[in-house]
Length: 239
Image (tube, rainbow, N blue to C red):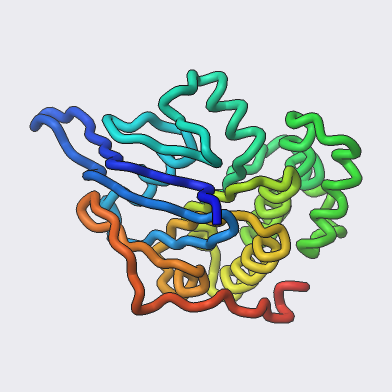
């Protein structure tokens, strides 16, 4: 099985008033195509920093990252942006929808930027898929938190990404809506055969991934005790 993400001797440090602060220390990671990987760990352990590096949003102090066989160190910012547009999608805790665009327009946006034909029809189909066909013309402020995150999921999958990065995707939701969003995320990820890298504090959510990794003090280790197969989506995911 080919690798979607490969990381070798990855380090990240920043300069503070107290001196050099190490955030990531010698990370080694290999994520195969189609795998789902959860990264857990305490706040401040480096989880989100690692996610930003893997997504080519930040530059490591040392080490190398390959995305779909492409070494990020050999790319300038324009080439990184092109790679993100072609191969990656993101889901964030804070939804990150454009306030002035409707649900339909938010989902259409990445498709239009990528030159996808029939972007409007595909966006309508994606929103129907996540149960929001009746919310197409609503602005984000007119949607509940769970509905906003379902719009974000539809937006993430419309361009058929190879890799999906999710940073605390249920962190701002109540348990019921969090469960519905999680069901939807895993169901759509399985159907799309997308590689999923998920950062979360929710151990139950992490357990639904094929692999679990734990970040502590800038080091990444495999958690083989709690790994479980992805669950079958509940009927609520269709609501």
